[in-house]
Image 1 (cartoon, rainbow, N blue to C red):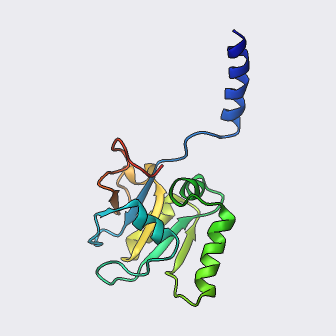
Image 2 (tube, helix red, strand yellow):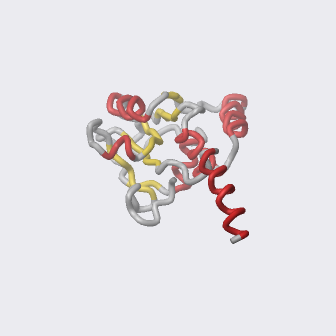
Image 3 (cartoon, helix red, strand yellow):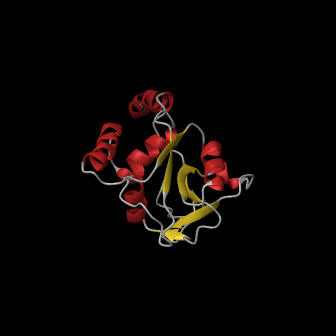
Length: 157
């Protein structure tokens, strides 16, 4: 009984703080993109600005959600395993070293990110999977290590 009295307030505080699993994320690309499957490592390299071109030599444009979004924080913790400050330093270091980073577009909703991807053939976005489930925006969801967001064992969430 005493454990229950301690556990209930902890659960309530955790729920109120928004702690828990983040949103399930999906990698989306333009429908004409020939890539169907990526590894976690490839996704990580893209998000860090280390990949500038797709295999067919189309220039990659990276689309991320704004820093206040749960999707952005899930990207940092689940995929990149770094803080927001470390992510910003990574992008600054790419520029400081004189490397040409891929264009980076920051958008405030998953829907706007998906719409952007439909108009830019080289674009790739990391968005909440619920935004692409309806099929209202014609984008292609890329498999991660052979799995789609609703598959058991999907590794980006």
